[in-house]
Image (cartoon, rainbow, N blue to C red; front, top):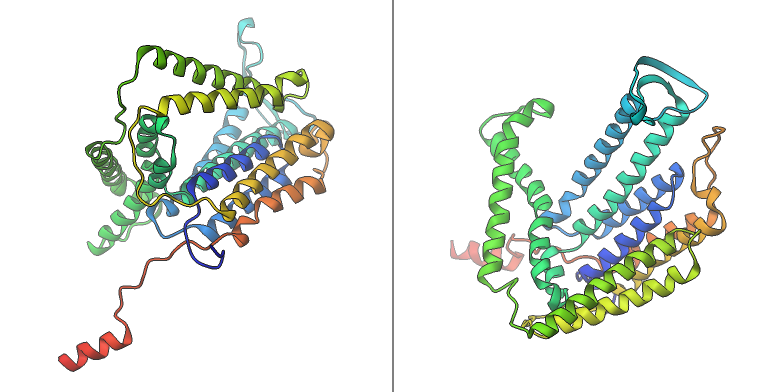
Length: 375
């Protein structure tokens, strides 16, 4: 299918791309790279999100990230470990017992420590923005349809929980329109008490209705399997997940032995795939019009993998370029390979099909003329 024809990209591809971007972000505290990654994620969302309710939930994740940065800074000022040389201000300090070493209530706040806290909050905020991008780009219901049969029960619960944020965004807009029709023009902080309760009530009600509809259609129901096969499936899946966790830790930590890295990760993924295949044999499920996996999907997921791989390699060969120099305080570097990796992550904004737009409800010209002649 030509990339110029509008169609929806497979939701698993968007999640793979978002996770790759999140892995890349987790490897750095360089503010230039973090802001560039945030711009890349926002660009892809703006270019390839559809008109569905969950596509409008991305800004909620941005506000959540901003709140995380503020909270991280406040916690550092109040109870954080202060370090640095450039003094900003001094607060009254509370003396703590010896068992609370490392925790400092108040005291002198230094610029270096405050920047470190802000950068840690910014890194977490950008990672949350990556997950928000996946929620904005991928239809959670289509993602459930594409999940393996063995994960159908867990997928049903995940879809219901993931749909809360998009439903929250849609509920906010509906409540605001209803308030405007009633003549209530309050905005900002003053409008929060008036819309908070209706929004939460409407969001929970719609999520429960989705759960009831999915249950009535048989989602989350599994067939019977022999006890021995259930134990074998559980052992393979659990062992695969543990091996995958150890392998991911080995890949991210350059001090671990080489055997704990990629070989352990590949073995864990293989065991997990085998366990999922055995578990899905007793889950009868059919799919109407399965989502295609074509070149655009491979391009999306490859861009995320390339971005993550570049940052993982840089963390081993040139880790100084991925961090902000704090002691002494200096200008953050801008490593060209990291920039190229992030720009590769922005390619889905231009090289993937545009999402299908809803058809206009306005009558065509010929239909309007026919209606006019009949009138």
